[in-house]
Length: 174
Image (tube, rainbow, N blue to C red; front, side, top):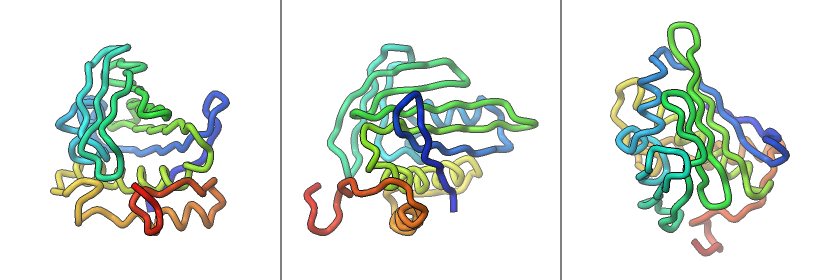
């Protein structure tokens, strides 16, 4: 399983993931910063103005309404950060040997969202891995995506903060 860790990020709760790829930083940067690349793995369709202070738009996520955010950092081909609701997403691509390392950090607005969000990012990053390998996938909401619940259950069992509403879960709105 692709697992994230619960961390403190500048005084805020966050979940962090790191992946090493045998690809150039430029290739991975394209996959994590351009709408065509993001379409293969990110949970929402994304349109962004590629500069600090730019607008970023999120749509077509079956679990969330369309929304906008602000680009916090845009430093190709290494660093992109933006707001998404009350959360922040930080993506960093760094050269590593003959390939590169991707670090995704989701700075959380609420501690109890850690297990839920970590499970979602685990599914999404598996889709990114597939996309970078050249495998066809249907995205994180598609039928070929790994199931979310086993990740969530594992994070909860490991003691990652949980308890936030799960959109689409029985007995909950959304």
